[in-house]
Amino acid sequence: MNPSLGPVRRSTYPLQSPSAFTLVELLVVIAIIGTLVGLLLPAVQAARESARRSTCANNLKQIGVALHNHHDAKNRLPPGAAMDVAPFGTSGNWGTTWLIYILPFIEDTDVWNKWKFDAAGAGTGSGHPNSNFTLSPSGTKYFCPSSPLPRLSSWGSGARRATASYVAIAGASKDVLGSQDSRCGQNAWFGHICTGGMMFNMSQMRFKDCTDGTSKMLAVGEQSDYLLDSSGSQQDWRSSEKWGLQMGTNTATVPSKTNGWQNGYNTTTIRYNINQKSNSWTGAYSGVGADGYATNTPLVSAHVGGVTVLMLDGAVRFISDPISLVTLASLAVRDDGGTVAEEY
Image (cartoon, rainbow, N blue to C red):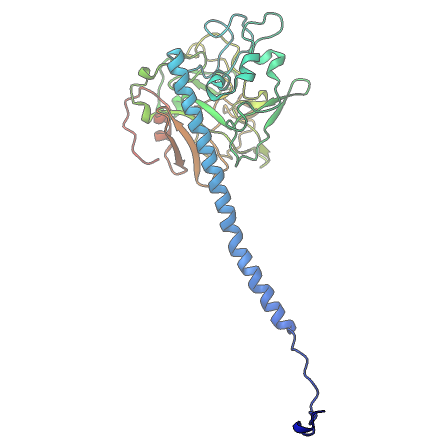
């Protein structure tokens, strides 16, 4: 002890320990954190969906560039669905779809170089063993990242085939536009298969054939979400059905009023509203799903409020759900002469 400091007085009060959170305070903090997380998660999910939708639009943009490059190289667009006969092959059988014909123009020559359009006895196009590739050609360009649908489809004895989120627009149904001309036929299951668009069965269309203008013509749209059957169960009823993105057609003629009993996979004829996901499809023989060979499966997407589409001029647009069916159908016909309101 230092004498100069005098005696040290000891406190008569005990030292107080730091106070802790009470249970009420802890619950309040937890509630605040929960509220903040609840506010943040939707924003994060919205940001992710926005990024996925942007990727989907970019996929369609790349497809549009490929279609234009194909037109420059061949002086025509690819057929929506073809049989492997001239000018698309030499051996017949189930043929090939537009998604295969544009492979060289989206930098996917590996699959293209293996494709067989003239392999007698081994099956051609979709029927050839080389068709059973397990990875989507061009990586992810053919698949919308928002889609919950499977990327591989079973076929036959278990072979796995790549699928796609995008479908060519063959035309519009006479049910919508009242057209009774020779460009609309009806297949065996009452699906309407029409050719008023730019990519249909055995088509060889040029840009000059689109007299309504390429900016007002649908070329490709989304089929990237499930439909619902009459029991409310989800069904993968894309226009490719179970055959994958490569399946074309097995009929060597263009569909018409007198020759419509055929199928054109990976193409669709507009007959229903976009995102019309439930309408008791099963058993309706409506050109949708297993009973209709999916010739009229509507444009559907996993995006909120509409679907992403590619116009013939290469522009990518988002068509909102409220668009009228008549307007949608008019956009699917190349020469109806109608004036399309800018409602999309």
